Length: 413
Image 1 (spheres, helix red, strand yellow):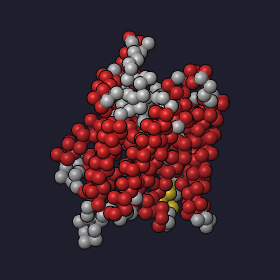
Image 2: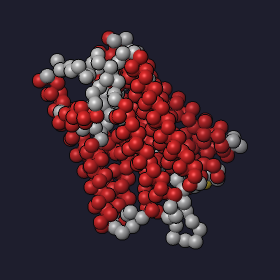
Image 3: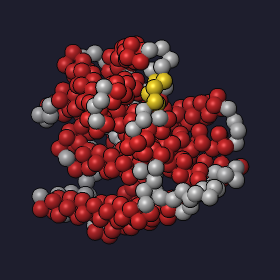
Image 4: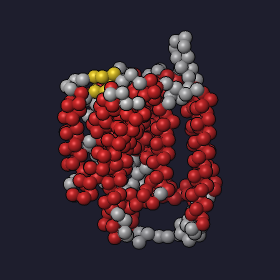
């Protein structure tokens, strides 16, 4: 049985800043490292590639790195919802590809672009509903059913577009997502809004927990976290608002896709951390049987997670189409594995019940940085795959060892 201290239960607070830091390092010592290894990897990679390539820390490359990461980050965030349940969705990438095929055919038929995007999202929701039904109601392992859909959707894409088909999407609004930038003042305004919303949510949650007599973190911790968020955001916005063009025409501003991805992460984090659904999802991922005995509708949680995963995967597919400007029958066949890798590298446990969306985003940045840095060094894609695979194997090993270590700590408590 774990030890409970007065600061952890029944006191209305969770300790001061020093106690929180001490508790964090205690969790790390017990194996709960979260995204710490991924953050360390980011630092090492940045120093390594920055020293080997004079182009790595240029403003243009930094902006390109953020844009290139958007698609993978969104897919990794999507997969977190099912990975937290110790499930997997191998069909997410190709399902997104088929959704984009349907969007293209809708546009070709004269459907307004917003309606075409909605149709694609609805298709994603239906796919998630079917997958969740097979897993939750029929009991088919998620690996098997999503592998079946992975194969089936490849065939459906060929039926819809034909073998090797490439079709341009000439919609300025869609192309702008990955290829256009916001005015500098808008970037600063969105950053200010993000900081205010983050602080407001923290204060609201603090007041709500205090009203219910639950443990409340000190205000100093909330303000410190908000200040760090504001400082990091200000640094990124400042860099992106600088002219990064070597030509006469300047390129300035935050790429449009960045605030979209940040909004998705914020909304998803709020859903997981501040709602009953999120608490139930973590409970089911940690111990399905205990969750069922506690009255949680385990089946509905699983179905909902697959629906969210598939819909967010469609968004990642939209980013892909926006970036390359075409739909293709082969879209999404390999990126899902990179999405799983990003989540695991970021610290999301494949065993379920542990991980956060921001961890997946950090993992996606690690993988994208590897690809970007090796590309700048002129190394082949084969080297990139080998390095990424090695990082994934290391992350999975750390996950397994930390889980074993934390389990041993609990047993000794």
